[in-house]
Length: 314
Image (cartoon, rainbow, N blue to C red):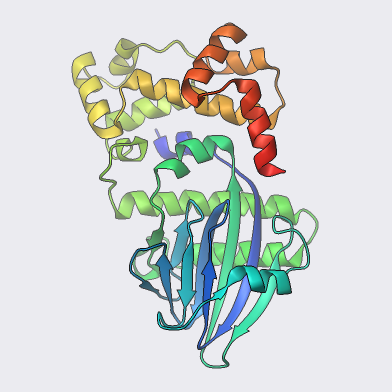
């Protein structure tokens, strides 16, 4: 059973926009942070990245850097170069709204050149509350250590080129390519650096816990009991419950509850189902019971959630 696929099966990119920067030494760019997840890859000369107040680190060609929370950062040919705010250059080079306008930019002092491919992706409510929420502020995947070699770099090239060409269907293609990148990034992150904090990603490192997580994701509306889950993964209830909690940081039933509410949040954001269908999809037989449960999880009602999301994406 592929637990990561089960977790990510309803985690999708809503939209993605890309850019290609030609940067010549000396150069430095500063971002105050963005609303989505940022993914970057460079060819040519390496560059330095500093995320918020962390020490700067060197990024080599074909390395992939992801900022899951769009954190503030500085990129430069050398950490001592005074940075230029991204906002100034975006206003100068971009010809339309940020979420709809890929762009190309040339900047710097005329020395050695770095070509940077950049993708800003906005993921669904489910993905934000389950996947992005537990990721560190920066993931640095070194090309020299990637199990897929140049495959990720190639996918990044394709994503940027597809977006910049703006051929028919480019928006959908860009979003799906961003989905593909996310799967590869999470897999490499999971396999290359075992999570130390208790969360579902760490749970996937244990076969039995991963199987239980996959079952809950496959059938969120099923009236699961602790006994049924433990039996499905061939463990006693007490041993299964203790192991699950130690790895995931929640009991199995707490995890199921949070998963159901995250799924519901995504469905509410889509606005394609009446409330009762959303409730039934995650295992509730009445709107009232579901609304109480959702409010306990989110701190506000399902209707208010839809209103908040509308303000955030408008």
